[in-house]
Structure formats: C-alpha cells, structure tokens
Length: 434
Ligand code: PMP
Image (tube, rainbow, N blue to C red; front, side, top):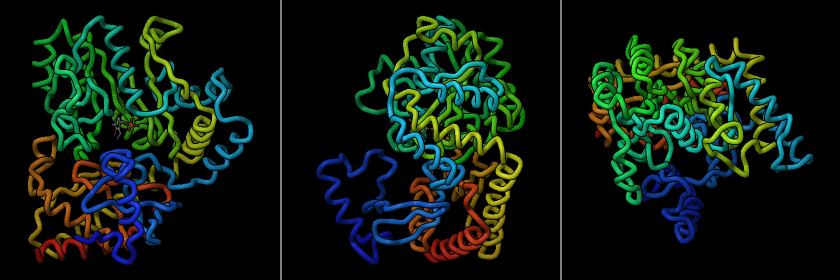
C-alpha cells in the first residue's frame, strides 16, 4: 500500500522506517499514526503545514486545537525568543508566572486561583486529586467518550486515540473501578448515578463540549442541569477545558455557556503551541495545593519561563483582539461548514451529520443526530477514512480519526475556505463512487 501523503517522494516512508526502530509504533503519541505510515512534518506557518515531502497542507489538526492563533504567531514567537536569552529554567518563582496567572484569572470566571502545569493530563490528574481531598470522597464520574488525558483514573471508556482501546493494559482494575462512566447529554441518568453514589462521588469531570469523540454539543440546559446536580450532591464539577479553554471564548466554555464549575483545566490554546497547562478554580479548593495546603502536586518544569512568556503573549493577543478574533474564527468555521453542507446537497445520496460550534467542526457519516458517544460510534468509519485520504490528496489535513475534531485558526482565510470546500466536494464524489 502506498501512502497518499508521500506519493511524490518517499521521504516520510524512509523516516517512518527509521522511526519504528527507536520509537514504539514510529510516533510519540498514538493519534499521530495512521496507515500505512504518517507523513512527517518539516515546518508550519499560519494555516499551513509543510511535510518532509515538501507538500504544503492546509491544516485543520492545528496541534489538536492548540494553535488558535495559527502556527508561528509573531507575538508569541517574539516573546519566547526574547526569553531564551534570559534563561530557560530557574526553578524559583518569576514575575512571569504571576502575570500569566493574573491573565487566566481575569479571563476565566471560575479562576480565583491558578496553578501552572505543563500539559492537559497533568492538569486533570491533579484537579481530580484536589476534588478528592476537598470532598473526602473517592469516585470520579466521567462521560462516555470524554477524554481527559492518558492517566489511570480517566482512561476508562475514553475518546481520542483511546476510543479504539476501551481499557488500557497496565491500568489497575482497582483504579478503573473508582471511575464511573455516564452517558453525555443525559442529566437524568447522571442524577441517578450521583444519587446512588452520593457518599462516594468526589467529582464529575467533563469536557463541556465533547471534542474527542468527534465533536458533540451539549443539549440546551444540559450543562446547567449538571451544575445543579453536582451542587446538590456535594460533588466537585470539573470542566476540562483543555480544548475549549480560550478557544470557544476568552473565558472558555464556562463563559460561553454561563456556567461556573468549581475547577477548570486548561492547556492547548493557552500556550498557542508551547507546553503549558493550568488548573484553576475557587480559592477554597485551590488553597489545598501544597505548600498552601496538603494536596501534593509538583513539577520541575511548571512555570517554565519560555512557555509562560509565550502564553502571556498569546493571552495578551486574545485580550487585545478578542472582538475580532472570536467572530472571525467562528465565521471561517461557519463558511466551511455551510460550504460542505451545500456540496453534500448538490452531490446527494451521502448521509452526513455535521456538528460545529465556534471554531470547531466535524463530519459524521450517519443520517442520525450525533449527541453522545453511542450515536458518534454509529458513523461509518470506512467513509471517514476515505474522506481523510481524499482530503489529504488535495492538500487538506484533518485529524486522521473520526474521534477527533477539526480546528479553525485565526490564520485561516477565505482562500483556505474555498480550497477546503472544493477538496471536501471532490472527496465526497469519490466516496459516492466507492
Ligand atoms: N483533556 C482534553 C479535553 C484533551 O483534549 C486532551 C488532549 N487531547 C487532554 C485533556 C490531555 O492533554 P495533554 O495531551 O496535553 O496531556
């Protein structure tokens, strides 16, 4: 089988064959692999990613949502560059960390206090620990298809790369048994589950908008119902805003939907491509973190000055230009989705559902509404795979899995929209011929 990505050259194939010998599966994160082998990246700028085979692709993976401002956003790069000469790691506090925490606190309604970490997984792992310490309860409730990183208590019926692996080997049954999974968009079922576990349910952790099982939006009033149910049962509500944070709105899904969780976790768009994450929430809960309190969380690289400088620049840009950035990315995304819908109508005979919100969208090959993990999994995976291949052939790169989301950035322009809609149209025609 030859790869559509390396048709003109075999550089990616050569690199993959070399990678396989030293990197398990040839990659450093499983979602990066697709058959027969992934293309390798050489560089990226704006909305474009250049492959090792010298192909220029319009990118809708965008660092799985991290690159809200686009690849290589000038003020973010300048901030990181100017920090490099001053030092890359001190392991004593800096004013930079205060500045970033102040910006997060100003942007995010629930963020009385902030702890900076490096990744989304670190943020969710410690948010759960905080919730357990605060409630003195054990169990974690998550939703079917929700992804919160690659650690033990949340790798249970998870989305993203784990959607094809219902339980990871090496995770203790004793750990998984502490996690209860409930269907998304079903407040009545959540209420029954929490009431059954009233003395045990430490937290509900959720992506307010599911973005790792394809894209799935909350039904009207669902999030406010979840807020009510958790409050009534002394259960901490954690919004995992690793995808939605700073993307759906400057204040994330919390601001967008007007819901105040007890804790929220961030990464991705916070650093616009630099590794930085955050746990944020009410003072009462956050003050439990050592050294203020007795919940231990620590990291050598936390508050890394280069990442933090980049994040300050990213958030400053979002604050300064929020009135143009958020409407623009939503308009670009809407144009793509409307364009795709029109093409589908013209072509006819292909059953598709498209979910979109803000700067995110995903196409599902099913006629039914997609509103939870079960309905997402009804979509035809073979057709999605064909869509991915045909788009890539036409220089459009979407995440390789149905169980991910396409991301539009501030760098995507009308030209990108036109070319992308054309590529979808051609791809749909090929799918119809199949
Ligand atoms: N939560 C959500 C909602 C995510 O989408 C992800 C990553 N895709 C994570 C947590 C984990 O973040 P990281 O990969 O930075 O550890």
